[in-house]
Structure formats: C-alpha cells, structure tokens
View 1 (cartoon, rainbow, N blue to C red):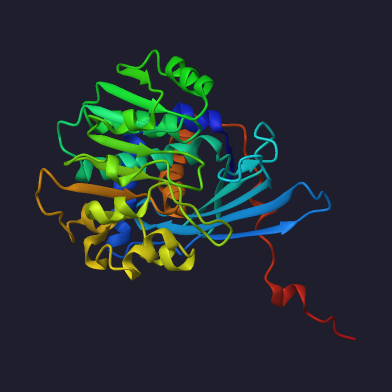
View 2 (view 1 turned 45 degrees about the horizontal axis):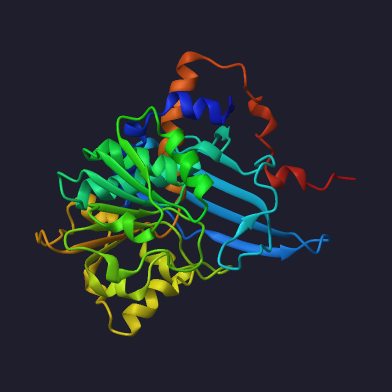
Length: 358
C-alpha cells in the first residue's frame, strides 16, 4: 500500500552521506541513459488577492537503479518585496502544500506521498557536494558561503562531508541572519565566522558557495583567486531572470559544470546562454555533472584554474533517488501511515464509458 513519508521521516532516515551517494547514482544513470528527467515546468497566475501571485513548480522523472519514478508538484504564493532584487514567499511560515509522489517502476503503483521541505534543501546540497567531490581540490579546507537561509545550511553541511573543511566564512546582508547561522552551526566540527564584507567570503577560500535568493550578482568574478571552485544555485527560469554571479565569473572559469543542458534552453537560463553568445566562454568547456560522474568527461588538471559549478536546475530524479531510500527504510521498520491501494486502482475508461444495452 502507498505510505505517507513526512519531513521528520526524511530527516531521521536519510543521512547526508546517503543523499550524496544517491545523487551519484542518479546522475550516473542520467549520463548512461538509465534515468529520464524532462526540464521542470513553472508557471504563475494572478489571484483574487492583488498582493499575492500563485506559482507552481512541477518536476517529473525516473531512476532505473532505484526502480522509482517521481512527480513533484510544487504549490506556493509569492509577493512583491521592498527589495526588487530578491523574491519572497507570501508567508514563509505557512504550510508547505508541495507533494512528491513516488511510483514503482515495476508495477506503476504509487509507493508514497512525501513532504518535500526537508528533502528539497538536502538534495540541492547533496548535489553541490557531489560536484565538489568530483572537481574541488582534495585538501580544500576553507568554505566561503553567501547566504544563511534554507539552502545554505544543508549545502554547507554536505560540502563539509566530502572535503576536510575547517573554516566557513559566511555573509548575508542581514547581520542578525549571519549571527543566527553561526549559532545553528555551533555544534558542527568546523569554525564558522560571520564576515561583514562579501569580499571576505572569497578571500582565502578554496570553495565558494552561493546559496541565496538574490536576483542580482552577490559574487564578482574579479574577487576570485586562482584554484577556487565556485558554486551557485540560483537560476533563471520562465518566471524570473536571476544571476548570482557576474559575467566575469563565467569568463574566468576554466571549466563550467551544470546539471542538465535541456533545462538551460527550456527554462531560458540567459545568465549562461548570454556569455556563450558573447564569446566569453566556449560551450565545449561546459560539462554535465553526470558525464563527470560516469567518466565520459574529465576536467583538465590545472591547480590554478577556476572551476564553476552551476547547480542549474532541480531534477525529479533527485527526489526519486532519495525518496526510494527513505521508502525502503520506513517500510522495513513499519508505519501505520498507509493509504488503501484500491483508492488509486481506478477502472479502465473503456469499462466506465461502456454504453448499457437496451
């Protein structure tokens, strides 16, 4: 029978290391034709409340190695903010009605209905950590972090899992948010320092991660130092144009890594397309994470080169891979949160539409 998987289940049953390995399997499957993941669909529409706009975020995909398919249906409201450079949810503390549905590739049946708040941040952070494991210097010990919100914390923890990070230099425009982040990381085995100048995030860092909700660059390419790896997670789509770094960052990068080429064009990610069109970077220097994991592409060894990982889209296969692990564990330990199977086993349309005789 299908089960309900909560955020608490996900936090309890899926470790950061397991999530990173799930991303490795999923991206390898994608590169080798064993996963499918069409670009996400986003749309927005006005509501009866002129101050709120409804937005939807829909993913679909499947991973053969986990025998699981997935549909994620996101449902939110956004509002205009006093800061036009940032987007905001209408009520950040409101219930999250986004649902992830897992399906069994063997039977087609629904396996689970999942909450997505916890898993959403973890799968982004785990994917960034996978890129760090593939491309950052092995002895990276200093992490520069822009952002202190829901994506910053799991991203920071995941990167610290794959590299011997000893110091984190964090910046947010809000000093209170910086100090709150330091307190949240107080029990981690790493020194976390709040800095007052964004340039201090970059200075001396081996990996620089941008995990913000900004629509304009928080990182200037002129600040970068030889041998650094840069990560960003904010991307343009059909609803918003967003740029977490400037064009100089693209121009200085010796290699760029992305998740998926289809999403670049389908979601109109102009922040990558425009530097290519302007000749600031060559398309052949842009690699997919799956090709790196599968060994189909290799980065040229150059300790002084800047590597830029543009975590350019969320993929349903990320939820499918992580969800499969959580589902297996929860079923094994037992749960009473089950849904009768026959609620979903509808009759075929041929029998429903059959015209009675006489």
